[in-house]
Image 1: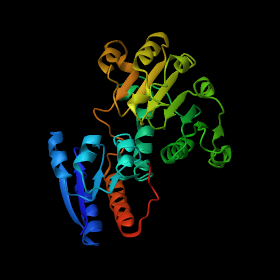
Image 2 (image 1 turned 120 degrees about the vertical axis):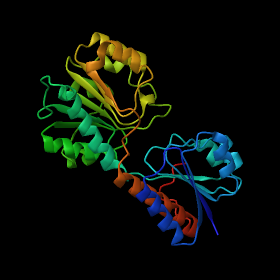
Image 3 (image 1 turned 90 degrees about the vertical axis):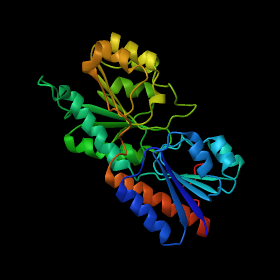
Image 4 (image 1 turned 135 degrees about the vertical axis):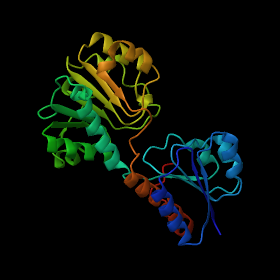
Amino acid sequence: MPKVLIATEKPFAAAAAAKIKAELEAVNYEYTFLESYTDPADLLAAVADVDAMIVRSDKVTEAVLDAAKNLKIVARAGAGFDNVDLKAASARNVVVMNTPGQNANAVAELTIGMMIYLARAKFGGKSGTELAGKKLVLFGFGYIARLVGRMAKGIGMELYAYDPYIANEVMTKEGVKPLSKVADIFKTGDYVSLHMPANDETSRSINWDVLSLVGDDFTLVNTARKELINEDDMLKAFAEKKGFRYVSDVAPDNLDAINADYADRIYCTPRKMGAQTLEANVNAGGAAARQIIGFIEKGDKTFKVN
């Protein structure tokens, strides 16, 4: 009987945990929940005899993989998978999957909500601005970006996108104007929303080279990864661009330095909140459980990322 570990420093909502249990119990899989742990040693002990893992943002390191002698699959309940050491997993013949699209609506709604919040001067009594008629550029055009675009279109924003891996026809079908150069993203947008993974190519790529191109009234929106941002260069943008704003669900490491002089132009949630809805929890957790079952029972690798 396969054994599954659900390891979550940040636990699933009760309804999501119940969904995972129901999926696994339907096929008579054993399962254990390791929730709200703070000592990495607890995770190393818990993985010792499991065949599969479900994680959220938990770090699946080489040490974890070494401790999991029977591990065959890691299912990341979410779209991003930079918390899993893919190279180490592949070297040990461990399949890694994500659950793309399951939290897309939650992240998209938060993206629009934070844009409105900052545009309206954080609802502090001062006059703000509207999103209608403004130019929004989607940097990346995956599940989340497309939903952000549809919501923004309903508000009346003018939509553009850049993604070298997506055909222009896909963008135009969504009513989005394709851009062909990274520089054009920052020259065009009143708002630029980031929707790409953090990897060797993209990490710290939002730097002064591109931020120097933005207009006098510009908002950078990041519900992706903080590693995309060159934080020193962003601080320079706050200093030199009097209308530069930043909104994110993942605070930069230099947030205190930014808040010291530019608190009215930045908003970050206290912790990463993009996928923190009941619906997203249930969708992602259930999908992760089903993917494990599909892989073990049928060898299905549809969402394999390594």
